[in-house]
Amino acid sequence: MNTKKIAADEAIKLVQNGMTVGLGTGSTAYYAIEGIGRRMREEGLTIRAIATSARSEAQAHSLQIPIVSFTDFDHLDLTIDGADECDYNLNLIKGGGGALLREKIVASNSRQLIIIGDKSKLVQQLGRFPLPVEVVSFGLEKTFLKLKALGCQPTLRLAEGKPYVTDNNNFIIDCQFAAIPDPKALHDQINSIVGVVENGLFINLATQLIIASETGDIQTLNA
Image (cartoon, rainbow, N blue to C red; front, side, top):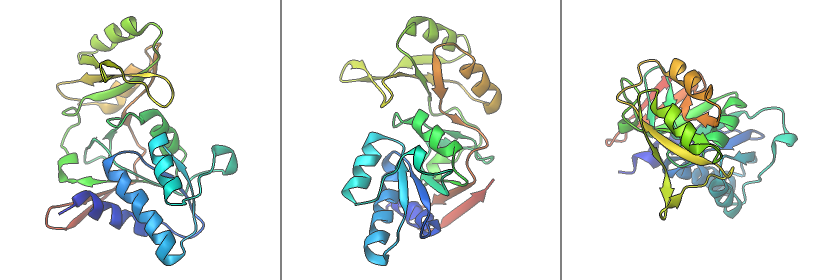
């Protein structure tokens, strides 16, 4: 049973005519974008959207979902995205797909952020999944050491043997912490490091979590 698709199909029911919608990035958000495209074809749903990555934007174009820019609207009504981890307070780790900066910009400008996933994403405490941190390439070695001093094991993300480059032409350092007992404090510590662009802790941004189980049951948590 495709739990990602089940969660996505539940979330896209919240999309209404005339909305400006944020399109997430990753294997789960993929199904939400596909579902929105299907509703547009079958139901005549009319929306406009902004994508959180070049990959999601290309998918939207293929489905004839109209893409706009931030100059075209005041806010997004709704964003649907996945997460690498989520706790019961709806704090998130995102960025496994490499789009954390754009995802956070879109999320912070959305009235609602709907996170979708399967039960494996819901944890008591964040930290099992390595925390992605987007950094500039200049001074990378020093930024790396400052992140390590926070108590993590940092690893520069690679793609085909070379540093992975984000859509914003930055690098990503994946930081493995034993646990993250205070996500807000760690978020602020990381973002205070010069050379860090943004980190994958999403605090007080998600408004609803939709979790699908292997039996097809849906669990919903609200902020």
